[in-house]
Length: 167
Image 1 (cartoon, rainbow, N blue to C red):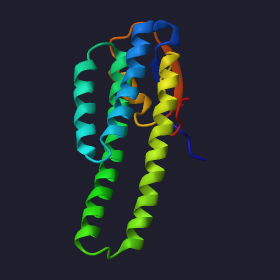
Image 2 (cartoon, rainbow, N blue to C red):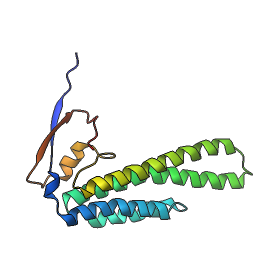
Image 3 (spheres, helix red, strand yellow):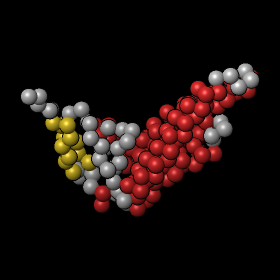
Image 4 (tube, rainbow, N blue to C red):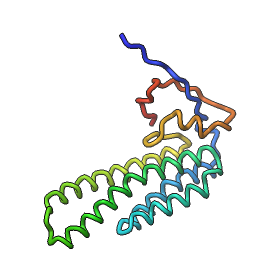
């Protein structure tokens, strides 16, 4: 029988965050979604704006910095997938649409990833609006490091490998 190592991560209670902090956390997801949407033709522009937003807001509060970082980290793989699709489209135009079937499979994969990104970003924004942490890119141990300055904590026991996501 295998014993699971239990680690405790302390998270602030939702009522501890001001309306301003919750709004800034929600804005981080809205900013990333807007930069993702408007930069689909040039995906790295969205990543640049997302990085600038994170740098400007990372020191505001622990709650805001967590959500800004998670929103930025969620944008990175989506940006790379979208950039791959754009480069593939250019390749198709230059090579008279050879390997079109492979591209269509990749495009379907990219659409699924983009829809998942949009879904999880909206869900995380709604959770942030209520003052909750929502884990889909960061692990609870990372939150504990980000929130090192927080005084009042709520202890949550999670398995040692952080398998579970909080929602």
